[in-house]
Image 1 (tube, rainbow, N blue to C red):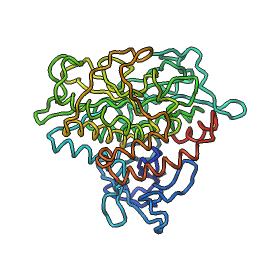
Image 2 (cartoon, helix red, strand yellow; image 1 turned 90 degrees about the vertical axis):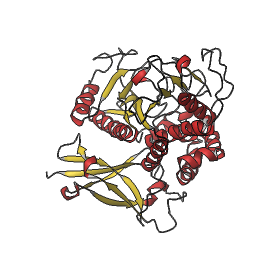
Image 3 (tube, rainbow, N blue to C red; image 1 turned 60 degrees about the vertical axis):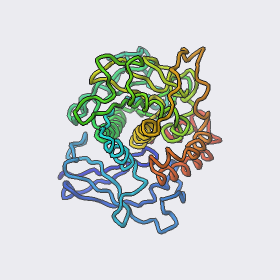
Image 4 (tube, rainbow, N blue to C red; image 1 turned 45 degrees about the vertical axis):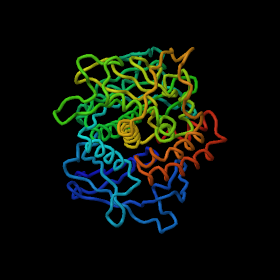
Length: 429
């Protein structure tokens, strides 16, 4: 087969959409899609969402990419690329999540700081039983921090690692999580857009490789009700104009050594805590995970080396100093999530929000925090809509589309329970 190009974007539902294109498209180029993809839901329902233009003729939008962003793929004779979306008049599409992240990066760069990001993904491996019903992957020897065949009898993660090396993804880690068959995948820090480009392509690659082994690798927040949740932790710092880590105040990290930039970022994340949930924990299933005492980012709090707070301050200093936001899950669009975390942090720095005291409770039996996220998607969407400052920073039109689609999702899923709710999402995220 002649070489071909797979051109992709990650949509409002965190679904990868794209086209296979001929060899002649391998260069600076573009292709067109129907803009009303942004009115399409998981169940294929087509909705008149703000900006989707479903009742204005379902016009085109254009995906544009650069030759330098084209890379090798995990499929033979296929190159792959991510691009930016533009409307049919040639203007940047306000609904484009990648565009929202680029705006967030530009806002920080206007302050003389460049965001660096590292993302941790968690996922469950599922496989069909004799009747074709999805069940947890049979890995009876799996343990937390498990490696090798007891944790992964089919060794599909070995293939994921090998292909990640071939693709140039800088893997920091693959390990088994606390609840078998759950796995964690971590890529190294990079510039924000590059880091998120890598994570969305890695996630797609991992799912497609696992499927070759009969495994549905799902990043949905809680596909196994009796198991723990799967998050998407956003670690971030900033490089200043001298090339130094602007979050660092020296060789040691942690709460005792925070500088004003770290404090401002923390204050912003706490101030916009409730609104953030509607964007970065955006499915009905998210609120099975986002609960008190579940290490999930429910509480409006922060701390040091403490896994039961929403934002952790690393005890590492110097080049490795960073903040870790733990609320998001990968049913959210990673571009939108990182944009939202960066914008909430920037608002804290620029608006001078007050930083509440550090959490001193254990997060299980005792918690200082008295405010958490909403308990369901309906409440979280209402909190997002009420947070006009955050919505404007992330992108008012993107948020309006999101709010509309998620309100419809509340109705679509309100009578679904157990496997029916899982199966509404599991093949897409």
